[in-house]
Image (tube, rainbow, N blue to C red):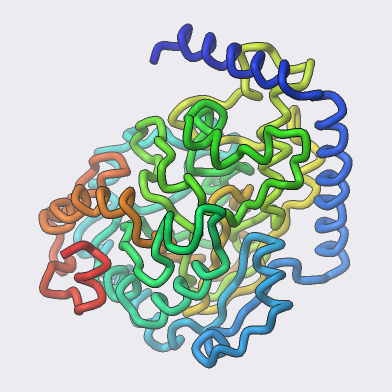
Length: 410
């Protein structure tokens, strides 16, 4: 779709919504409630409270998670799950990853291929230092582990569907989504990300399946919207881009390889999944041009900016300190960012591993991803940098256990 056609479609969609809704009254209600909620989160964090829920993996394994803890994860749309992996195992993985990157001369190859990934170009802090590594043995081992699988299964159970259990996805079966690694050095001031959401930009307003997902948002009572209702989510169609995830992820996530906390160039979250209601209704206000969705652009991250979303920014907080083997999870609509400066004293390293449950959409992607794995090419969602095709020591099919083979679609 060319720019003129896209702007025309945006204007038509907004006109239809404005004709069906009392936008001024509706948005005033949304802005009041969600603005206060974001301000409260910010104030609690400023007082030293940890707003991001914390769960012990041992409690997941024992089945002893309280109803209050489950409610906190659903209410905030995120969680830190502690001690999913033993620290000594993760320390070994971190050393192995560093060696893998160095002995295969990743840095020189990355400089030669710079500029392929423009997904983050619209974010004020620029592109983060993320390595286009997908098939190292530590990444494959973590993805196919029983502990990470159990963690994701538990998190998936917090979802439901108005269409009935099991209609949209199977929470017990996981699909592997190959993502990258981050290695951030102390003192770095170039690798931050300004607040945004992933998983779609303009298509959130325009795609027919997204319209079904957000039917409660675009209604007289926005409170009927449930961010953990999976109905229609696996049916959405993203606008193709070198770095837009084509899988349905119940949670984005990463596994900590090193100790890191606030100030260490770490993740920041707006622990308010209903904030997407504000984001989706904001373009309907009178101060936004008719053909604009608050500057959302196809194929880019959906930026959350001072001009359009100022009240939400008051609720963005850094995650608590995490340690090797801890994991962090956030709802696919959750606003998140990365601290601009790493003020700590040691590397801030993570493996990006999300939760992608079994469904038709994800199985279709596995058929694209399997040959990439076998050949050492980049995950098909990302720029075709293909660094690992000749890397010594990368994982192969022989490194998959039975669980890994199933999750990879073999």
